[in-house]
Length: 191
Image (tube, rainbow, N blue to C red; front, side, top):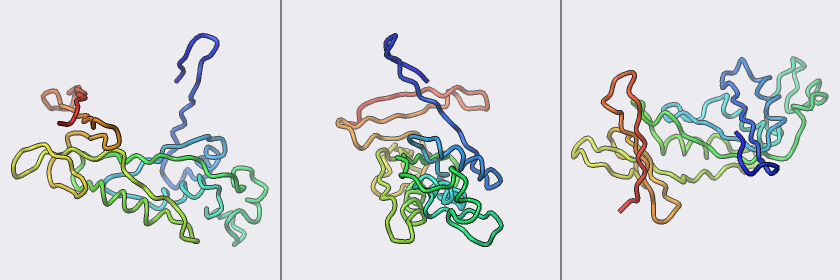
């Protein structure tokens, strides 16, 4: 992505790393060159084991477990020679909870796992606070409500920006449903 006036252009390089454990080395190498990160958390599964490993690497590697086969961990042994595994300053991070439209999704449960599972051994760690809350069509009444501060059973239809004032809601309409439907984005103030 790039933007700005000619001669004063800004550039952002996006790096999408795989979340599977088989790609841990690639993720570590990617983290070593980042200035900031977006940590994506599944709304159904919450924080998973690989999420914890990536988080530890983004926080400077001090808590990351690196197994190089020498029986030692946390940057010792051969890993101490690898710049991707050496301790550095924590990377600023924003978390995004995705897959809110899936059956069994739990925004607040996923938010809770960010705070519970990503704590360091010394008790420090994230204090994840939402900047958006899910909009849900209630099963009982069909009304669209903000699922805040407690979860609401129903179909996910969008989000509400709970930080700005006036609050804005962002909804997606499925355009008639079906596999090839194009979502329609609607932004409006919450009254």
